[in-house]
Length: 133
Image (cartoon, rainbow, N blue to C red; front, side, top):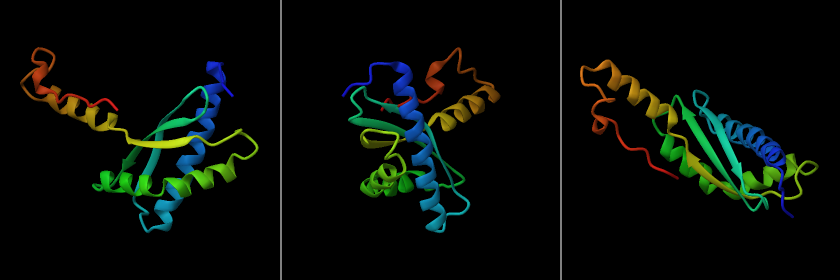
């Protein structure tokens, strides 16, 4: 089953995004991480709904990579919960692939560089390269 309409893919991604965010945020609170905000900034699903790339932003915590690994290790439980929440909306739940969204850190680095005397626009080597995922 393919979802050829871009609008349909966006709707499906939106449903997945909203529900996964609720699942992981509740898990964080239940795990005692009340000062941690976990946001799903973007979901990109394939046309056949076999995979969904989920970009996660973790705020107010220096252990973002550690928490991302925790999310990845609980991927099966997250998929089961997502399946329960979306049983009437999605024909099937895709494989969930989680990535850390580093866009906020990237923007902060740009702002810090602009405040320095050295101009990153003139010397691009001052800014770290972004990793593609």
